[in-house]
Amino acid sequence: MTRSIDFSVDSQASVDEIYWAFSQEEYWRARMKAFGGMGKLDALDVGPDGSVSVVILHDLHPDGLPTALKKFFPRNWRVVQEETWSPADDGLVHGDVGIVTYGAPGSGRGIAVLTPADQGSRLKCTATVDFKVPLVGGKIEGMIGRLMVPQFSVIQRFTAKWISQNS
Image 1 (cartoon, one colour):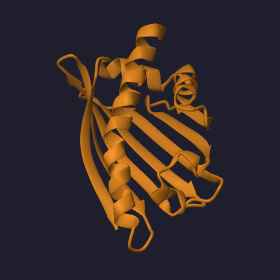
Image 2: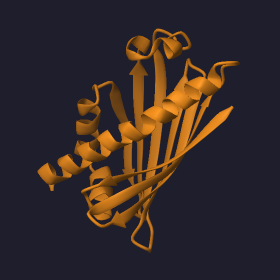
Image 3: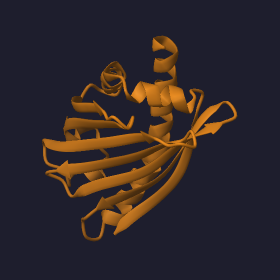
């Protein structure tokens, strides 16, 4: 069963500032380092239309996972995170984020829009989490969904801080 989660997260940084950060290799390397250093930037491409595409490879271990999740993951597994961020004529930035796991039964996808807000910007996101395990898959999807909003809030705060230190 697939779980859908809608949420929004505010940032002190503007839409343009966040979009600029997403196009910087240094931003992605700093973000990976700040969040455990387990990822490897596999690709960062800025297209002629201004779109930014990022591929990050994560080689993960289940050690830090809750016990309910840990037993469904192998000792080592790979997660591929692909993000594409595209500017729109209306001053918004549209994002498409995909997470695919290899060696574990889960995946996720998010469609996001960065919009201007009173004190910076707002990230609005609709995400789906799919964990194909009979009987407990829905519970695990719900747990992952509950972790998303706080996790994205932390990433948005990191991004705003990185922008203030690097622009």
